[in-house]
Length: 268
Ligand SMILES: [Zn+2]
Image (cartoon, rainbow, N blue to C red; front, side, top):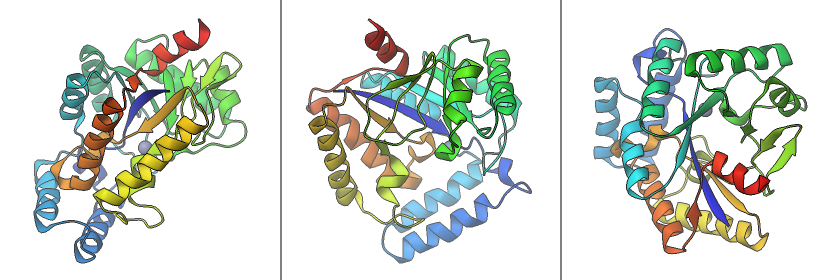
């Protein structure tokens, strides 16, 4: 078993949400619930206020630095359309795409359009134009799909997708590889609630069970989705959990590859 790490970029700044959606007020309601239920500390809450003051909700570079130090190749999924609380403008996404490609990361689409071929295809073409890349993959924001989404993605020309959360090996739909993934930060730390429901130790225990299950099923790849937004002291449990996860996998001698390296292995 090898591990594939990827990151969804849901936010760049705080101000991109003003007048567009209710993400910011909802975030503070959630934060105070977490404070009063003892899941986060006062300093964590103060860091959340300070992130708003700094107008920074992405932590792409800090996360990249950590990954690079640990030899973890990563794929970032970034949006070129707006919807369901993803509100940053296309020009800002374009700047980050260039920056991340220069940093040596793989970059794909954090998809908004999942309902029909025309829209999926238009989003594919838009990313192709903005990023000047020919081969790239996607993951849907909130992993939204219907029973035609994967076929339509393949038809549009995506090299791979990783929107299915499941204990399955990668499989092909037309020429596209689907990489089911098993670990997502929010599902571990928040579920079954909409705010932090587990502490650090409980989150690690839950994660170990998933890793063991992937090993028992002899799946070739363990898929991990971590949002760069949480690589911050404002989300201490999340950040500590991600650092623990990478160090734990290294201690278990698990090798890291990105999706494109995995496709090469699967097709060789
Ligand atoms: Zn997302």
